[in-house]
Amino acid sequence: MNILAFESSCDETAVAVVRDGREVLSSVVFSQIEMHKIYGGVVPEIASRSHLEVITPLAGEALRQAGLTVGDIDAVAVTCTPGLIGALLVGVSFAKSVAYALNVPLIPVHHIRGHIAANYIAFPELEPPFLALMVSGGNTLLADVRSYTDMTVLGSTRDDAAGECFDKVARVLGLGYPGGRALDELARTGSDTAYPLPRAHVTDAPLDMSFSGLKTAVINLIHNAEQKKESLDLPGLAASFSAAVSDILLTRTELALEQTGYDTLVAAGGVAANSRIRADLQRAMAGKKLYLPPLSLCGDNAAMIGAQAWYEYQAGRCADMTLNARAVCDAADF
Ligand code: KG4
Image 1 (cartoon, helix red, strand yellow):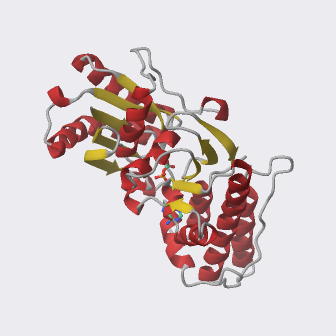
Image 2: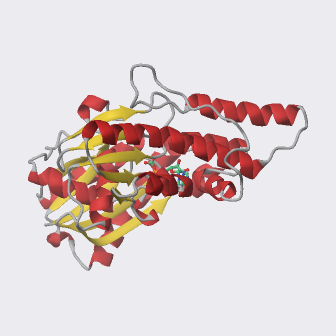
Image 3: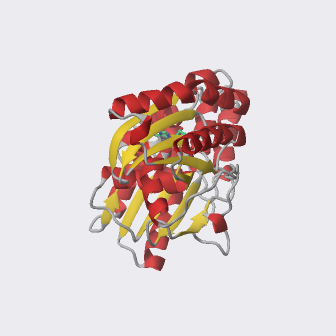
């Protein structure tokens, strides 16, 4: 089955053609980063308008690269939640139109399920059950993935997503937007014990996480130093911050592995590209099975949506023409 998949939940417009869930025939991504950079963050209306401009040519390009025509498409998939509502609506409306015109099934896909499914593309042998650690710019959670479509959230962030925290700290350090990757590079030359930073725990919810206190601590430290005209060890600060984020993720992940009894961990999301987090996970998972997606599949793309859509389709989870987008999706609907 050839699935034409769309992703437009934030600042990337992406279209892909995926065959039977695992074979990517094409995957094109248009990043809006240059448009949002000057504002230091994603501007929702600019994001929606840009999706609207590029989605049609991108769809044509995805078909061309796959060597297919619209007549070869058996189903259409689209990210319908969570994300920026205006951005999601562009993808959902476009996907509905294509599915209607071609008279093929329409498959709604949860963005986070898509991120997890990026690993099915990278690792043909990977099958549920497993524990998933999903860390991106908008979401941070641990999920018990019992089957391709049966999964529950075990713990999640109570405030900022880890990626959001990376981006805010990077912005204050003058590293541009989104600064997660630049902060990662800066941290490589620093000592992770240069600055003592807090690791918050959520009482009564040991698998939940909190990053906002850590973010505030780093920002305050930078502002205090500026006011006193003191210079900071920037690589040390970046390394100490990265280590704190990694510790928060790792302690929850280890506890979730213990509680579920799984010996397989799958990482997903843009922040799974972070070198410190990858190294710490590799160390912690020695003797167990760890799946770290290649950097090309960590960030937003539509191939991951097409991959998950294949399993959603098999579980009978198709939508009709009343499909709507939802900005927020609580853990119960995951
Ligand atoms: O998964 P993604 O592309 O978008 C969402 O679905 O949110 O993740 C983007 C996030 C941004 O916050 C970006 O700064 C962060 O991933 N990121 C990183 C790294 N590469 C991307 N954060 C830390 N270290 C990196 N190497």
